[in-house]
Length: 209
Ligand code: GRF
Image: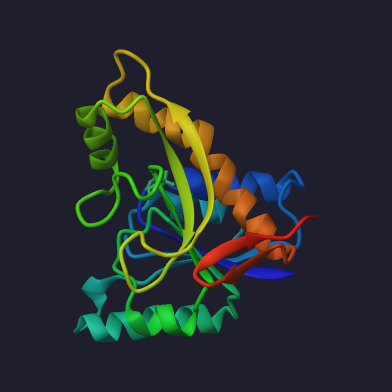
């Protein structure tokens, strides 16, 4: 059974998608051991509590330094014996010590088709604002392993979403979440939980089921 920590900062719709797919049996061999947020007010923590999943806040504001916060974050993951860390809208820079400790065991959902519209400054609604400003006709979402860079780790899954005339950033963001994020993040967890993902020479190889 894969023990998963889901790290969140906001509304938690990706967390909810994971919870629902585990409940419905679409994601197997997986249990959410803990939901961790840097934001005590994150509605995602309410979603965890409603699903009777441990919900923990590790806030930078409660620690004297960034280093102490980083240590507290890793200690929490170890306390819950986590195998896989899922970043679902976690607005915290992952410290190198954590990337090393969980090499190829931290995954992130990004709301574009990496390498488009990613990297510093491309997060949340800004990603969709930039996609619309560029005039792309197709966007989407990417699940990737987290390495020392920003949105630079090996890509696991991607799903394309059409940009439609009249889209606002908010409309596009919702479509990307509904049609892509909420599908490929749970699917990536299921693939990892069932031993179907391997990283070789910096690229992901998907084993046949
Ligand atoms: C999603 O749009 C995701 O792509 C981005 O952060 C947002 C998280 O939303 N990384 P939610 O908290 O899962 O609703």
